Image 1 (tube, rainbow, N blue to C red):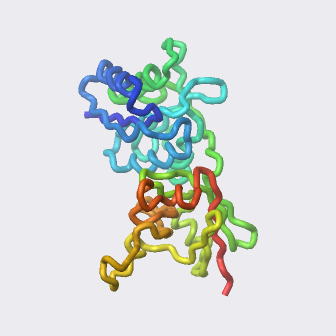
Image 2: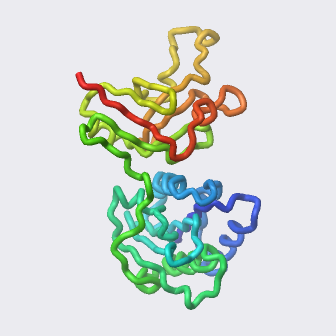
Image 3: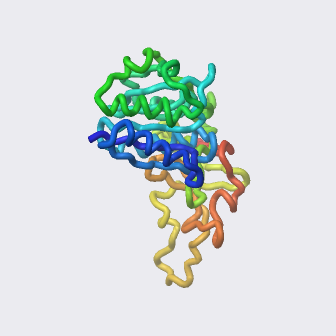
Length: 278
């Protein structure tokens, strides 16, 4: 049985997500539909890329992923279908796939060309659903599009390393539900540049000299619980997706605050790592 996932910035108030599900069931009643998220910030390509990159691999091979972010068709925003890691992705060619494609080479990319057969002002509902249903029935990508060799890159996906190899300049690409801020600096990239050196991490006016293994490493468990005062402490970790993350322990924007609110950090803000020579 085919699985189709949905990742959009449509939210839950409007009819869009429900209409898409209805259209999929009308085309393919036996399919399973899974919502990854409908709460992507509007038109936020890097946020959508981060979420789909870290969610898709938990699904079985052959899963079809519809990504409805900035999907209006125009001459600079074509539609594509990608087979990658034995999964299928249907989206606009606006950079969303570049984060995944930077680590895994696509097996096949096609530019969807069935628009002349479909009258639509809502491409996710009409075009993307048709393509997903075609794939779910065992159809090939060549039937619904022409092969292309590359996709549009996403800006600021790769951190910058200076010529002296003693500094990484990254940027914030995602803010999670707890207000933790995720950078585009992956652990393997960091360690490749670091080469065992000490470091300092700067975000606005804040400096960190250590990356913790987990959030609770900030806690001094030798103290009695009522003397720790650890909630609200700022820290840096490599998160479960192996991205450098600036966080607040047990953050809550209505009480102790979060990394985003307390430090004034937002999407595309710069995070700098300076490596210290011995």
